[in-house]
Length: 82
Image (cartoon, rainbow, N blue to C red; front, side, top):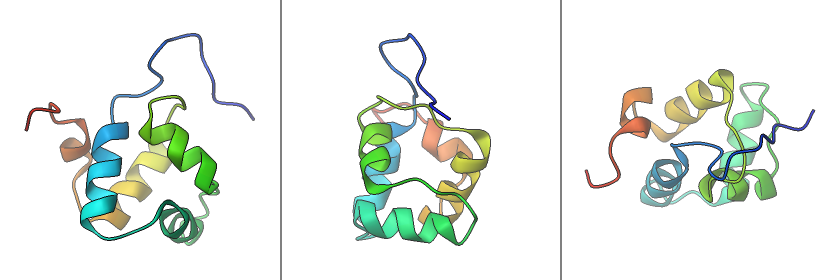
């Protein structure tokens, strides 16, 4: 099922997902593989699209990403200047 809507920016967490993924020394492929352990199937290309705000993120996906990245969901929403 496509998760594309008609907004220029599809999510507000993409930059933080990228920041924390890099800090944890995870590739996009590794993040994708770890998400599979939560029964979340997002390919590496879709991780890239999330990080560039081109794809929406469901609540289930967001929760799993926060757990894998060892941050709170709130931290993914923090202002980008923080």
